[in-house]
Length: 416
Image (cartoon, rainbow, N blue to C red; front, side, top):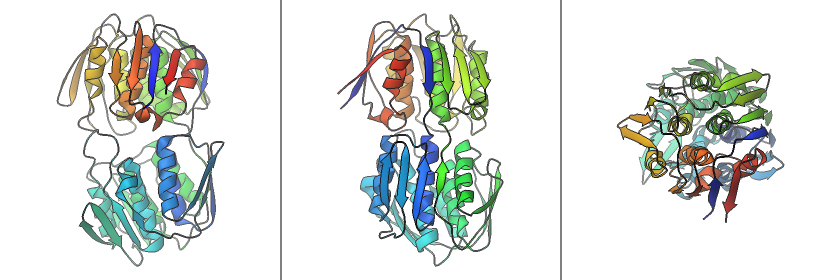
């Protein structure tokens, strides 16, 4: 099992390019199921999750090939409607095949999802939505089976905004009979990117990026030829890395408008950030100032940046309160940061972070994707050497992160 070794204390300098968004490319890959032909998806990051999704689509009968950040998906024939546990247990996004499979074939059998151990994240809202669209649903032996000759448009209200629920039902509605309205829908940029990809296929979708999305179903969709947006969480992670190391970096191929909440809180902490078109200049202060954050659905502060921001606050001047409103069980990185000398007390959904002058390198263990990124950020600023175990979590969502950090002057290496 690979490890990442970081010797901290170096200020990051230079330029880094952001990869395509993991959380955008995965649903766009499943959207290809809705067409029959050759689909091309560009700006695709080389990640474990992308390969897992590719293997699942291949299992369904699609041809999958990834080369030079470009995917070719052949979807002429769907030969299986079954997404087995062995695929789905490693990646929760696998449930995104549910809507497209039912819309195209009238049948889907999908294992209940797995993924990061950061909470239950049930998919009951997906099921309720498909039932409202006329699907017959049965649950047995850990599988959801959905059948419908053709889905019908419906008005669906989400009790809470759900990204994958919005995406699944938007894809299902694209080929449904009549109009579907999704109310209290997720507004994340990745949802909008999926909508734009579907529109490029011929779907009729209005309101993506707002809380009300209307989809008028069509009879068929043409294959994809689409370029995925840059990854806003990778962008924000590099901002944190520069901030905690008193660095001075330029981030290119990014979308600053997708990070307004993060940039606002970073500036409050003393980080100088200058956006220009698809670039950001980031300069970290001599010492960060403590800032309170509360994670919220987009456009609020993203839960996927909570852990990395906590690493910054661990060495900030003062005390910060971090409140996690999206997922339960998402403070597992606290124990590992404490091993590095951080003063953090977590209780329920709130963590109190008292900034210390410096962290110390230590052997630590990644518990989920963003927790692993937070340990990298902490290790960059720590005195001595930090060794991070279980970095397969990191490989799920960050493309070549150790190589990118090396280019910025960090002393980091992967131990095979």
